[in-house]
Amino acid sequence: MTRPPDGGRGGSGPSDETPVEADESPAAPDDGPAAPDPRVRAARPADADRIRELQSFLRRPNPDLLEYGLAVGSAFVSAADGRAVGYLLPVDAPNRPGVHLAELVVDPDHRREGRARGLLAAVLADATGPVTLQAHPDNDGALALYDELGFETVDRRADAYPDGDALVLRRE
Image 1: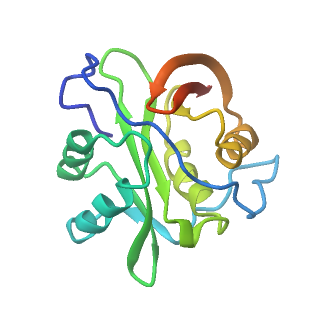
Image 2: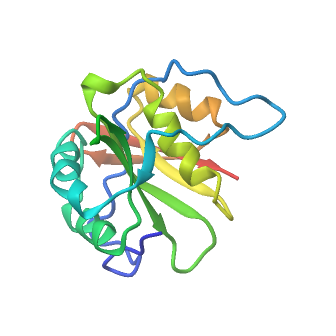
Image 3: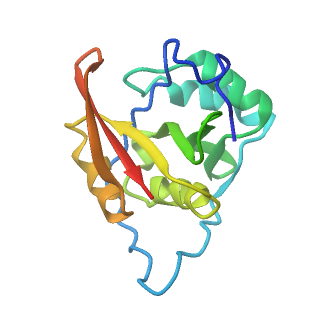
């Protein structure tokens, strides 16, 4: 996982917005985790330029955090025809257990294909503590997906985005 360049002390903070639509892929059965999505893999150096392009879809991108995540190899991508069409950047919390999902985005041309669900499953499968993220309250598709995956809203951060508040979600 990635530790933020500022050591987790705040700074500008991760962008945390998740501009995805709810996936149409079926939810995992109640008796066990979903099978790994074969389209999801660890990001490679060759993916870096495309991931930077995808970051432009975020409400509040954090280029420094992304560069650090790429350098230490913590990002995951969802690929189509060998090209990254989505990515997720998990960040370790240096002073507490768990992981924060700092950035998650899927190209608009590849939404509603189960890609966000696959990226999330890759991190959730290995999480050894709570998983947190934040999302815009108007991002209904993403919020529905997070609800399906067991996330609960635990806080609201006023004016976290240029266009409004952010909801903080957590999954134990």
